[in-house]
Image (cartoon, one colour):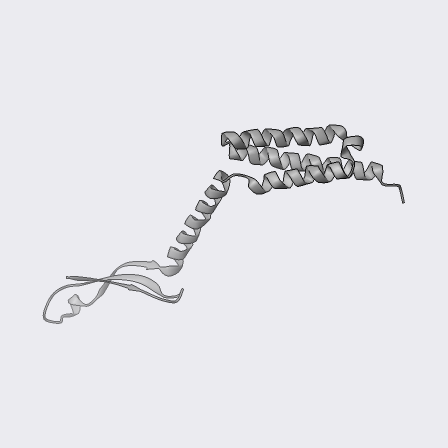
Length: 139
């Protein structure tokens, strides 16, 4: 008995598995019979789902480096715009959130650190917008 696995090249092709009985005389009942059939597109779809899940899990577990950088840049931008004078409470909230994000990052709580960093960025943007609105003369 032989088992043959055939893999197609094109997406329309398929993966097929055949069992060939080891009989010396040809007989119609001994013809090659497909045992299992799994289309290549289904296999690719499963592979894509698996890779997507792994990427999502990796993104959740990795350190929020970009989010921390974005928050720092937003706070710096708010300070340059005069938020310390025109919107000190919002700027202080952003700085505290960034400090909390840094603490969470150091303890390995990356998901919490990411959320705090995003909140810090949002608060810093609010502080900059308020400072810019108050500081800039009306048209």
